[in-house]
Each structure stands twice: as C-alpha cells, then as structure tokens.
Length: 298
Image (tube, rainbow, N blue to C red):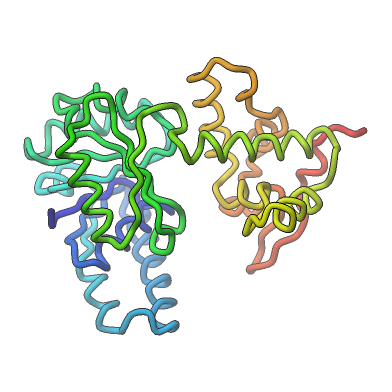
C-alpha cells in the first residue's frame, strides 16, 4: 500500500496524514473546505519544525514529508486511487455511514476502508458498504506522530487478510498495533471514559476540586496527567459523545454521562480547543476555569 487517503484534517486527521507522509507514503488529505486543509498543513509544518529542532528528523526529511501530502476538497478526487483510506471525520455515526457509502462507490474494489473512530461500531460502519470484509478500525492515539498505540478493531465480517495487512502497515509506521474485537468503546475508551466520567462525578458531587482530583491521580496512580486535564485535551464534546455510545451500547446506568459533562458541553466549554474546560488555556498557560461554577455545592 502506497497511496493513503485521510478524510478529515482536524487534530487526528492531520496527525495521521503527517505520520504516513513521514514514512514515505503518498497521502491525499480530504476535507470539505480549503481553509481547513490550509490550517492542517500549517499545523503539520509546525509540528515537523519541532521534530527538526529536536534533531529527530532533518530539514530534508521535513521537505519530503510535506511533498508527500496533497490536499483535496472533493472526496472522489482524493480517494479514487487510494490503497487504504483512514476516515477521521467527526464522531457522528450518520456522517460516517454517508462517507463509507460514498467511498464504497468511489474506491477500487481492493481498497481497504478504515475508520479512526474511538467508539462507533466497525460492524455497523461496514454494513454501509458492499465490502464489509475490507472495513476495519484504525484507532490512533493523540498526538499521532508521538503515540505508539494503534487499536486495530475487527468488525464481525473483517477478513483475516485485511486485519493482517493493517497490523503490518501499522508496524511500518513504527507503531504498536493491538487487535481487538468490535464492542462499544473497544478497549481504550471502554476503560478510559468511565474513569474520566467518574472523575467528573467526583467534582460534580463536591468530593474534591479540579486540581485535587487530578493531583490524586497523577501522584497516587502515576498518571502523566489527571483525568480532568485529559478530558480537556480530548475535548469534552468528544468525551460526551463516547460516553453516550457506551451508555446506548450497554444499556447500563453506570455508563450514563455525568450531568456536569453535559452542562459544560452545552455551554461550549470544550477544553483546550475552545480555550476553556476544567481549566483555562491561553498562550500555553493553564489555570482553573468555570467548571467549579457548574458543580453541586455540598
């Protein structure tokens, strides 16, 4: 596989495009507007500049990586020659189903269609195509160029051959792929999101404050960052979406999203990307934000 199409140029999409391009693949990056693509290329360039400054790659590597990325605003133009597609659009099931229906018509019969979804059923996504055996999950971790894990999710009809090929491709990116079966939240988010949700409940019920909760988990459990700061980093809207998928999938009240999480998303306090979540973010600084105002008082 040499021609890779990445759909969606946001945080995950541009990171995936960066990673494939750095390892010599020809990448077609697709989004609905050129301004999103221009922003993605600027982000990729900035991130590569950091690698050059650290000495992990050369200036020549940088130029080759950027040359390997082409941008497209029309799905057909960007995907018609793909050997592998990685969809990294918004975590919305109807949008993903539409994209995969279109890809099934556009792409070559042998093209593998993968999704970077963090929680949505690969089996359901595959059912929108006539090639369910070639539909698979490639759940990269953020930031993609640095994080080693790729959660490779098999749908009910995903073939052994496609799974093997995607695992091998992940290793060629110097990632560590882990094969898992299709279930709500897979492994990573089935474990991570309930922990984050419980941390938010702990704040909501005034057991402790934001910094206290994060400090307990960092110092007591050796987590590199606390769950509330991590939620800000992921995006509170994404956390809510994944938690809702878990709740709908398992029909178990223990997966119900915390009301505080829903209130913060409604108020558009989404974390790093909005500038305010459990903390405020400005010019690289971090301080306590308005989350305290939403929680219950003892």
